Amino acid sequence: MSSLPKNFGAAFDLSVLKNAGVTHEVSGVGINQVNLMQDVLPASHAQVVILICWSARSPQSQAVMTALGQMHQEDSAKPEGAGWLLGNVNIDAEPEVAQALQVQTVPLALAIIQEQVVPLFESVPTVPQLRLVIDKVLSLAAERGVGVTTPTEPGTEPVEQLEPEEIEALAALESGDFATARSAYRAWLNRAPKSALAQLGLAQVELLMRIDGVETAATIAAADAAPSDVALARSAADCEVAIGHYESAFTRLISLIKQASGDDRKEIREHLVGLFALVDPADPILTKARQQLASALF
Image: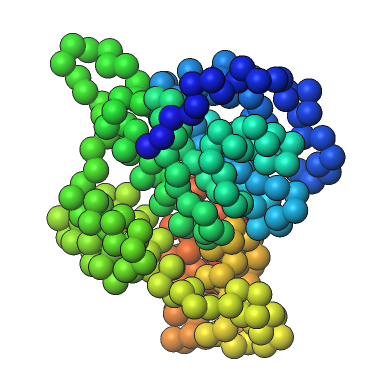
């Protein structure tokens, strides 16, 4: 972890710049020198703050910002709330902030926990990878009492602890060892078959293994050109879920189920149900897809 320079915020106020010149949708709260010091850093003692550093000159950084925005919106809709705050740093409009955060390239994601800055990634991760990163950060922050509800009864400690298999899986994912991560999640499920986190982790890792080395755009285009090809359809649906295009993925496979029969139909249905597990149960897209699947089957 690193801290911001002690004299940061004493130079000049960039808040008047806002996100000047930006015409596309921006996710999260725009960060400037003033609100970073006065609002964001103090807030990081109660909740994890995720910052995405981006530039209008980098479509990749905008894509990551959009994905994080959608994830934050989904988490905010949960009864317990998101549990984290999302901010965006336009490095072109806020050069002093970018310099203080030591931004060298975009996209760059950072977490701020108790005013300490933690680099997360300098890449364009898939949606499942983003979820794994956010969940890990929230778990680690919870160990320090950040983002945890104050106990209402003496002696209660509602601090989330990482399971040993989860620690092994996350460490393996950081090094790109998907096979070890999968084994760790399977071991966790063997020990705790009803663990929703273990089930989700395994589903995410298996998706990452299937799309590893797959060219997303080319695969989707090939599947569109050959809509009856089951293998291509499954691969394309994987790619679409990985980039957050859930509705396209579900529609693709449900359309194929209507045409298929026998083992092919069973195989597609099982694959689709596996993809359902990667989507927030409260997402209306998932609700609609489940209804469409039921209609297609019966």
